[in-house]
Image (cartoon, rainbow, N blue to C red; front, side, top):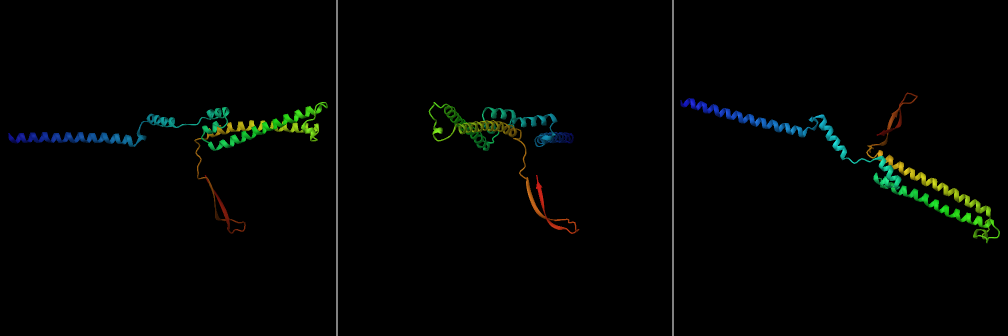
Length: 210
């Protein structure tokens, strides 16, 4: 009787140990699966990976060419600021400022020469300061024409500069995330080159890396 009880207790103890070991192994496998899911994201379903990539790309702040062009059209240089190309601002304002100065300067002298020319055509009018300096009406007319021509050139230059800065902002927005490698280089090294005589001759080889 005692022997049977001992065997029963031993069997129960063995079953308890086996069940505990099985549960421990099950927990270990579950933890391993969770770790693999965290360490190996490419094991996720395709739609999950696509969603993660879409969310990542949406967080990247892109540059809109349309917005850059609109900003540059409203205010010169605003497109360059939007594209973070601050070093181009002196070029933009320098070109437009020079064209604007030339326009107003030639406009002023055009009006001065034109008024003096019209005044000196009438003999009863008092002589202008230019007539007192010995400048004839023909010379005044030529000076007025030259000033008007320069004024028109300045207007064209201002319009071209305005259009170019809009184009520059648009192109910069298109190429804002363009991968430009810093490895672009041109190296030279001595080399042996074939000759018509059949003997190799020393030469210079140029290697372009990009």
